[in-house]
Length: 410
Ligand code: HGY
Ligand code: MN
Ligand code: MN
Image (cartoon, rainbow, N blue to C red):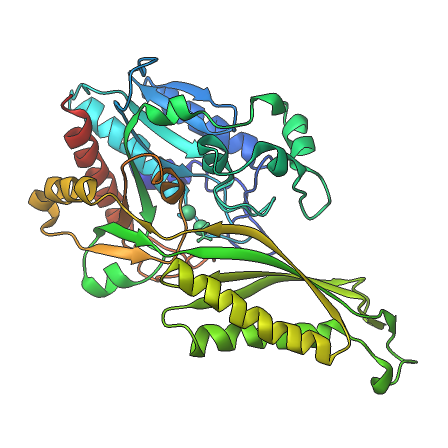
């Protein structure tokens, strides 16, 4: 089996004919087939599969010893996507983990420590708005009660979706004993940029994840008739929203080194061609190099948005949906991985990323590192996301070498 063939097994699951790419979200039509694929792949390798109370999947090579601290080597990523996402963001990490285990087993390697392959739930937060949902619940970084009340675009609560999927909402919550058994977590992920392509190297480790936050903006104006309402009598939230979009762009561009500001999702209510909207709901994604920078970026941006909203006679409500502080990965674990990879790959670079990952959530509890695989387009969260077959195989070999180094001795 190769990584490419492993990924080909899920290539038709969750395809988005309208947007292109994939739309795979928590408990939607793609979820169960992807979980079935995970189970089949794991069982074909003799791994024991379980799902924890937070809908995260674990495939075990050797079983953790209850009560024994920090001895498991875990790897994996996520299977869900953004709307219209690429084929590699998430699944590459899971498929590479299975391929790495297959290589180690065929080499006759017997781990001294248990190895777990994981697929964490709703990493993208595309349905209920909270990124890394499964790892935040698992580590207690998200409060179960508030998460259960979150709603999706159709107004369904997470609690209802959880029950409709046949799961027990009373099992949701932190499992710090399970987390405490992990000695190291390594996530392999397609690079979401062109750094490795520009360097001409197939793999790297990760140095850091920059901080990032998500806010929901609600701009309220006065719904009215597009034909009978003269321009002087309008309180149009869409015009105010146009000012908000430019404010996000201008602050990120001009006021904050390394900042990124995005509004990629908005709803006009009621959404009629001949109707002046009464309300705009939009989601803002802000990122910068340091936590304080994101907070300052937010304050400067909201100040400008408020001015644009008031200029149109509208009102603004702002709700923070998530904030993820900067993560600097475990230097000792990263150095161990780099040393293990050097014989085959030479000195591998260690690069920062602007993308969040489950590894970033686990890093608060467990020594954590990442391995990136070259992406020739550098594009991600879009169908153009890419990884060459030979680089995917190189990534799986790098992960196998890493697991051998980490699980080969007590
Ligand atoms: O949004 C992110 O950075 C990640 O892909 N969830
Ligand atoms: Mn992503
Ligand atoms: Mn990802």
